Structures are given as structure tokens and as C-alpha cells.
Picture 1 (cartoon, rainbow, N blue to C red):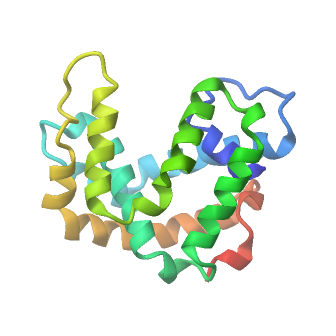
Picture 2 (picture 1 turned 90 degrees about the vertical axis):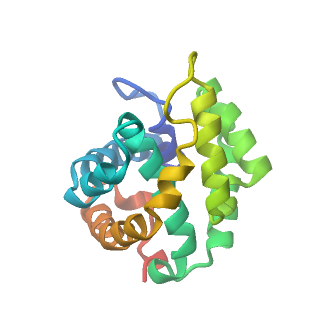
Amino acid sequence: MARVGNLMGDFYRGRIDEHLPVALQEGIRLHRQIDAFTDAHPIVLRSFARISPERRRFAGIIVDLAFDHFLCVHWARFYSVSRTGFISEVYAQLLEHLPLMPPDMERVVRRMTQQDWLNRYEDKQVIARALDRIAARFSRPVALTGGGEEVFRHYQQLEYDFLNFFPELIDYVAASPERSVYSGDEIK
């Protein structure tokens, strides 16, 4: 259930509801800690700086999805469990806990599981299309449209950044009091 809370961190703002199950609260807290650690990390800041000035405002979104892609591509470097098996388990947990989710999260989770977003992130073209879909949600045209060009242009540098950053993120999560979101036997 803590993994559900970890994703819920993208949809849950403000003070954490004390009536939520403890595991969900832990997941939300861990999500916030990971965001703060990531957004302030020198390697991630270097990745942000690689994005063109026209799209720099959206560097966080572009780099986040690029890193999701690189995690899929390099999964076996970091985890001993199969990526597809892990993702299937996560999808099952998310669907099981739909009633606890805010409506906007529930809609996203249904689409994510039906369209198998997490496995499809291995394809960098899917990342480009996802960035365009995010851009389309804005009420007016934004420079995020075409953001996949940034990933393609800086692909090797962003991959290098990811491969150097992710082991540090794993160590950070392992030291977190909310680490129950991930069991240690998944990590190599």
C-alpha cells in the first residue's frame, strides 16, 4: 500500500490526512522526500541545465520522464526482480486501492494500467508523445510541446546523468525512515 501512497504524492497536496492508512501516509512522505532530494541534486540540476532556454521552465517534467525511460532501459542494472513482473505487481496494488485515491489519480491510474504506461516508457518515442500529452493539458500552447526533441538531442548526456544519479537515489531511499515502500530484496 505504501507504493500507492508514493504515487499518490503526485496528486495529494498540503497536509497529509491523518485518517489515511499509515502506509499511504508513509508513501506520500517518501514521495515528497524523493522530490526534494531529486530537485536539489547537482546531477539533476545539470540535467535541467541541458534543456534549451525555451523549454527550461519545463525541464523538471522533461528530465523526470527521460529518467523514467532510462530506468526502464537499465532496470536490470539496479534490480534483481523482473521489470515487467514488478510493474504488474504495482498495477495490481494500484487497482486494488482505487477507492482510496482522489478522483484525478483514479482516472490516471485506470489509463496507466489499461495502456501499460510503465512498460511502454522503455520506448523513447512514447516519452515524446507523453510530453506532448502533458503539454496539451495546459489552457494555452506552451513550449513543452515537442519536448521530446530535448530528450533526443541530449539523450546520451541525460542517460549519463541518470546512471550517476540513480544509485545515489537508491541509497537515499534505503536510508529513509519511510523505506518500507520498497523492499530491499528488489535492489541488487
